[in-house]
Length: 249
View 1 (cartoon, one colour):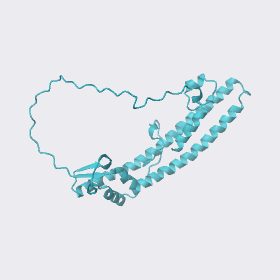
View 2 (tube, one colour):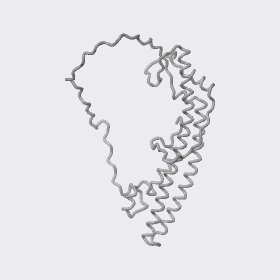
View 3 (cartoon, one colour):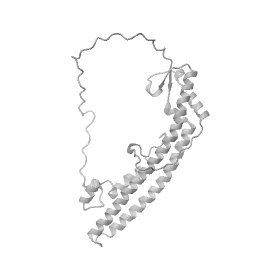
View 4 (cartoon, helix red, strand yellow):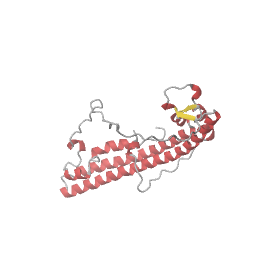
């Protein structure tokens, strides 16, 4: 789990998980959203879920009687090779360097997140200590300002983490481009005209596999790539499903 994910899991206790409308209607500003929200119904088991009904194929469609096409040459006999791209990237010296750089940047981000989290928790306790000592209106204003600060922190760290992921992907794209060229070379050297992903092949013999040869050639031609700076751009799209996942993870 990434540093940001830990940050996002802790802060909902500070009401980050509640929607703005829900916070405005609630008087318990510092209660976890789950305390007032009804428990979600468990999703039905895949075994219990009814199977989707596929539309029945049309049986009354008239099949046209088309004339035959001109005779063409038959495709060549397939000479097959297999390759594991994940294994190549895992053993790639350049890809290992990219992963190390991304992990280094994520460690720096984690430290910054922990500092901000500590600051927010201190502010929360200070606001709680003032409850009953100031007017309800002033108390609510301080709570709202604190919640806005928490939301802004979440957005900031999401953007920074995404910028790190984007930088890593840009570096990996350089390796992938080189890899495609090497696969073509290996296929040509072995007289192969069809190379399949090894993970999609149920059975193959070792003579078909060009993974190790590809790794050797890749590490010979590309030992290192430069990871570009992690830049947050305006309106940058955030991939919530991939937060915290660095290259090769």
